Structure formats: structure tokens, C-alpha cells
Length: 276
Image (spheres, helix red, strand yellow):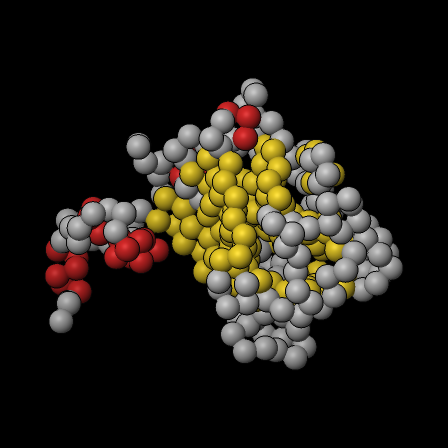
């Protein structure tokens, strides 16, 4: 059996060096062990295990905001495994958002995923992923999804998004970067839309190797249903040296209340950039 004394006597325990002793650094075992290498990895695991009615803001690292509606908080009737809920107000343009501080870095291979559902996904706009600091956190970063434009002070973004009020009513992956000739780039994620009252998971992964990035959408059973990658050319890259928020935002485009359940958020990044 392993012992604490043995762990503490090793060189570089719970590190990439330690994992490397198992075999190739990109093996399946190494990938499984990545989150446990706490000397070299920052890991956020949030299942929102809060008492009923507890607001997200003031509960750890999270900040909730929004234009009207009800900010994210644990519901009065709690659910197994924890969840927080926001209710979008019944005025077109009202929204609710959730974020961490801006301490995620593409150069350190930051990644995130949100597992969420909406009771009624019609006339819904949403975006989630990574954004640099915004002018207002009561608004979204994406202004137009048909011919994508980034607004609200954002410059470096990597977002899975949808805007049911536009010509493109299905999901897309949107990136932009602050370095010259990094342009706003969109890849349609099939014709994917949220299924009412059914969980889906959206993941965004940045890669410090060449400022590339990827997006993935998983169904309620964690099967991969859509993906996209950006960065094969400078025009579709996003600047990895910019600190960003982990960010999620939902907006109604109609006069109907919409309930968003956020089940979990996971995020990770290397403690330091890694030469490749």
C-alpha cells in the first residue's frame, strides 16, 4: 500500500514528472492522471453543493450578474448532485451570467466545460467559454452570430454560442484574438440546438501550442455530438497570453421566462506554460 512517508520522500510527487514515470506522456493513463497532478495543474471542480436558496455570488470564486431576472442560486427544491438555477426575465434582451475571475490562460492550455439545460430553448441566446474582461457583466460578448462581431469590451474570446433570433439559429464556435490578423472566426456546430429540459455539456479547450483551440458538445449521456477546431491559420487563432474569465451567459429573445439549470462546471490549466 502507498504511504504518506513514501509520497513525501519522492522527487516531484503528483507532478507531470511523476506521471511520466508511468510511460508515454500522452498515454491514456497519463491523460486520466492529469487532473491529479496538483503540482502542475490547476483544477476547478464545481458541482454547486449549496444550501437551498444560497446565491452563487459570495459562494467561493463565482460571481453572478444579469439584466433583471433571477441570478444563479441553489433552488428551493434541491436536486441530486447539486445544481444552481437562473430565471431569465420575460423581456427580450434580459439575461443572466456567471463567471470566475480572469485567471485562465490559453498559453497554459486552459479548458472548461459546463453541463446545463433549459426548460424551453426557443428564442434563446447563449454563450460559454472564455472571454477577457468585459465592459458590463450584464450583457453578452457576442453581438451578431450570422456575421460574427464581438462587443462589450471583449477582444480575446473562445465561445460556443447560439442566437435563435438570427438567421443562423443553431450553435456555432466563435473565436477572436487581439494579435494582428487574428480575426473573428465562426464554425457552425452542425445544426445543434439544446433539447428542452435535457442536459448537454459544452466544452472549450485552448492550446498554447500555436494559439489553437477546440469546441466540443456532448449529449446528456456524454456522447460527443459536435466539434470544431480553430487555429490552423493565424486568422482563426486566439491570443493565448491574455487572462480570461470562465464565462457563461444566457439571454431571452422573447417575452417568456426561461429557467436555466447549471449542474456542474469543470475547468483546468497547467500551472505554467509548457514548451512544445
